[in-house]
Length: 360
Image (cartoon, helix red, strand yellow):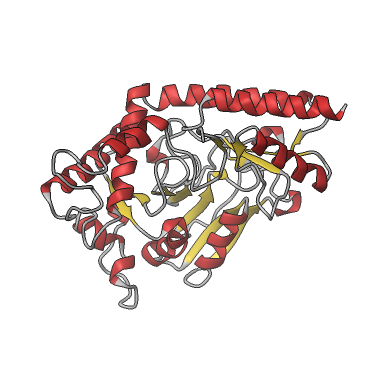
């Protein structure tokens, strides 16, 4: 069977060049005579893989030396708890609730701090990002939390709120590495790797070093302290070795394309192609408000659930998989992450046009 175009939201598609390179090294990674999955995480060969991945990530994102880069486990969902556990000082945090994952993050944080919802998109069923210009935050809040890109409902922040001196925490799981960002605008960034930077099992945390504390309450587990992992250079315990290795491959692939400026241009063209089709279609329509549209996750419907399901089956017959929308949103969703080529988006548009013509 030939390769399909994989529009799954995560675990998601990987660059074919990365998969082929990893396959070639499966039995002999860097001349060690073994797979990366077999080697000790303390071995020089793996330490080099880890260090190179960090260096490439720093170079691609322009991460200042004043920030630590941590390669952790537990997914973004574990960060919903680690963030308040590690950043709480006054016991207060403001959350921007713009989708399911932001909602879950706020609910988890309530176990540790007083959570105030500073803005919510729930009234629009998360189809639009609330206006955050001039939004006020508690000056004594320990941090402000947002999810930059809404994977399920296909929206994204077009601009960051002005949080003043309050630390800004961002969940960038589904948009990290898709375009350049100013890391210094954030106090902490976290992202699960399985959407846009690698495979499941790895979570990357980028945190300002001055926020990493040793004097946390004693009940905070050792493994859930950023200080534990920062002091050990992400090697306190056995890390997700294969996932770090694959992340490193993706980072090298991105560098080879010309970095995040080049990737952003490619991603904008892919998104423009798909949204342009949706805007003129008589069968399909996008669900995200135009001023909030995600460049990574494009959500759309026909207006009829049975027809939506029929189109998903129709697309699968053409080798386009993973288009069924999340159960919370319904319809369809095309996750057009970095690894989806322009040809894949064109194939989807052609498939939609053929389906539409058949319905006429």
